[in-house]
Image 1 (cartoon, rainbow, N blue to C red):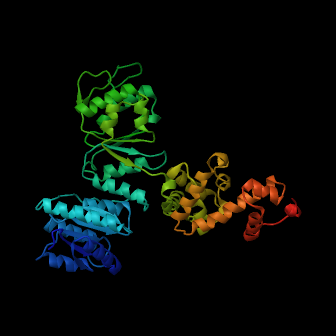
Image 2: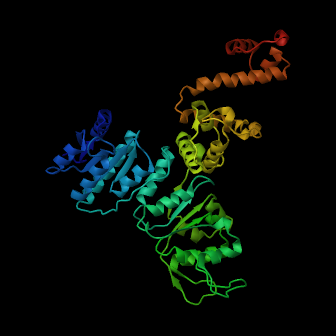
Image 3: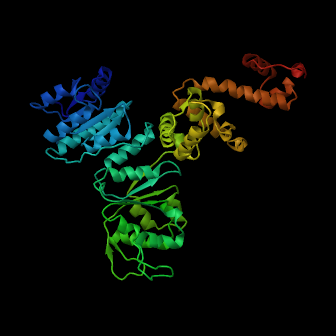
Length: 474
């Protein structure tokens, strides 16, 4: 065995085994490969590697079964799970069953080498450490984009933790779904999950909502009220839009987080509470701290583990699968057949900016389910506002950003050669506008463009632009 360690690779895909063998061998590891989990587990009975890298879906024993048997019989061996099925279920199952790390395909070879190095070091430093992790059935959040894989990893890593989490992301990105997943995959999953949208509660009622009140504590308090902290005791309290919490309530919340107890409004006896806080915001809390609108000490209490949710425009490759999901959901709710989005319509929709993020996409799918005339959805079936050119009010000030958005869309869809596609369009637009401003006179248009007249004439011919009677005028 080399100093760097022995790694076993288990994957029924020969090409993946070859890539890992070559890259890890070059990094100095000793490698042995298996094309199925049964052979590997048989050899494990009389020989042990430092680290195992296993595919999650294989004929016979899959990666989760391999992971289960390894963690039971040899808990000191780190297992790295790799998978082409990069969903939340795979990520959380991997971590919940004891995986050291989870790598979605296609993975970067350098990332795989770094994870392998960490795993070998961990194995050599923690021989004999046992890990007992509960099995949790999972389903939920859709997303194969790299940014969503980071979210899945975070949920998986936090699945056996009580630690406070701050979820950051724009409105409509699905922050409450993440909060629900964090609770569901936690040791508190059998206890209450209590949500409160701070922004939806009048400021003078938030304190009562959180901590409750005694009868007669204030005008209108005709009976005792149990607050959200008491309702969530033993479980999870999700505070959505925490950035809108009034300063005086922030002070009381900080005290509860510090002391683990609180008083109802008008109460004289402290109430003990054991609550995990998950907070969420679309605001920049650091900026609000600088503006003295949010307590810095509370910010640091909440921001123990931050999770950033990407905008929908940052995960365009997920839009088609999200649409299928929402269309099926809407159809089920309305007891009708699910609509089918045609490929050209899907491509068009994938390129839109979706400022309302996933929530806007879900509402759109509900509209389509009700309003689209046929089973298949064509572009001209879309709502009128979806057919208007986007950013038309901001073209003069931000055309470069529009171009960036187009390039991002094309690359997300797997298209190549975008520069060769964009350059002729760009030049054609510039020429047409210059000719418009010159009244069709090439000499004046070439000066507007900063070209020579011969260059302009050649470009007009190359791009197949129409000439007018004025084209030859000086």
